[in-house]
Figure 1 (cartoon, rainbow, N blue to C red):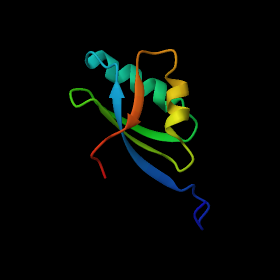
Figure 2: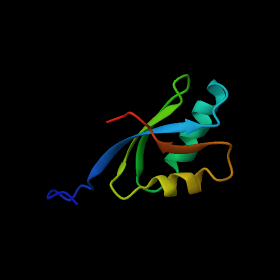
Figure 3: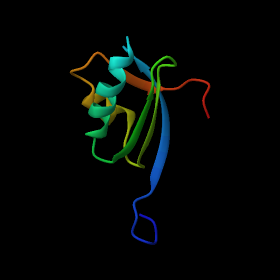
Figure 4: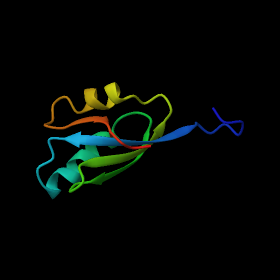
Length: 81
């Protein structure tokens, strides 16, 4: 936690598998925003990646657990950062 009581946040860039059209974008955003600690989601459909602003303790495993009943999965974006 930051000295002012705010939670520390992180930005994650993740590859997405299973996206087929623009309709996936809004559905994926809705699912990921339900994950505790996720503050903002920005999906880039043609490029197949997502930018998340989230608490430091949000893991890829937690995100994929939330996506388990969907056709999508996230993974580290290779060649990034």
